[in-house]
Image (cartoon, rainbow, N blue to C red; front, side, top):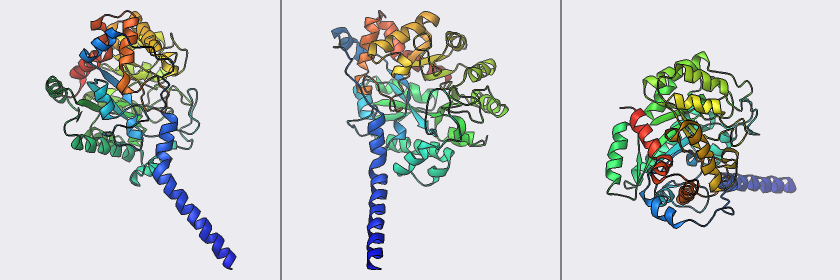
Length: 391
């Protein structure tokens, strides 16, 4: 009996220590493992880049830093994005994206919505409230709460943008106050609605101003480029898209199947965004846009954010990002391209946000003019938002 009690006590202590380790360290360890930086292919920066970069408007359509166990106001030594590093990089605006669900065995070809969800474990490991462990909508609402808390505690260094007036007021203030950055909230996949149209109001009230219908799997909205069916827009999806447009919520077509992209562009009355992607003309991947899709998005007045990871850029160097951008510019013009890093999106990139000057340098070497570089690095994004955010 004493031996049995000893083993029960021993295994009980192991369980307690295991749970403590999980809740205190697991999320951070996963973050450090997945969000790497490989600087081995980065060139020496040109003097022109050092002179031009501080003068630029800089914006990014997509980063997943809300997903991880971090304080966004604290500068850290791993991952890709936090407010201090955004300010160091001379950012004007960064879009912070809420990741809601990610199926186990994630890949670019085919994922089932019924697969085990890794975000559930991450929500537990990050010590998110229990309401987020079982509700996709609550996960989105909680990530918004985190960023609004950061805004309140930032002493004006972070301003969350919800309207055209918010953005214009921020731009006016930034002219005399350089150490600040704007943020905007987006959602990666409207499975966050949990199939309930009424939840759209809750997400809009929480401050989300851009929403993607799908992520890595098909949902009630329609088909993903990495889904099982990869179908088009559903009846429910059409109802949601029409309401989003009515409310001036920006539609993000990243991760959408070809059929879903085509169906949404048929009914869209407002320009769309593809927040983080590559193009098949550079890298033949089901995750990337075809030339036909790039042209259709440009015809809609939309804008495409080129990603920084290898599968999107076609390589591991800053110059590969510039080459992908050049491809889009040559295809549809300068106004329809911007940056969509996918920082902190479980990807390895050549630099973190404080080192975004490497893209400036690469665009110079690609032969773009100073004004064209300013458009690509962020002015296109800012002008798009000034025209398309809610009044």
